[in-house]
Image (cartoon, rainbow, N blue to C red; front, side, top):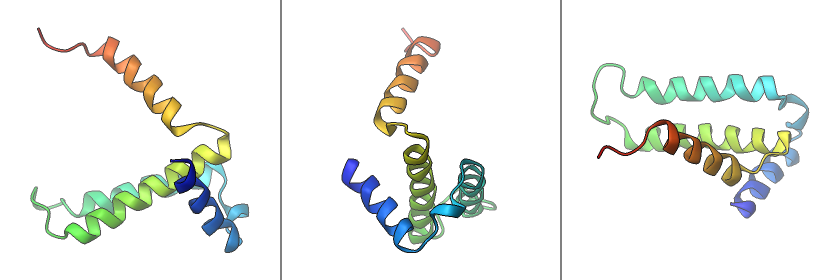
Length: 94
């Protein structure tokens, strides 16, 4: 995960995009890319364009990981914390 995050930040910084990647701009970009992902399923629950679905998921993840980096968050740590919280909130059915 660390190498992937480094590659994302390097890609962004080499293009001079860092100044535009504010937390607000990244949050907006995540929502926009998520909407583009949803658009693939707008009229049909089947996946009409697998390649586009993969690209939109990648965009959401790239923006999310960039935001983690900018906010000094460890993505694995915050995901594990959320999974632990959800485990309590939504225990398995018995």
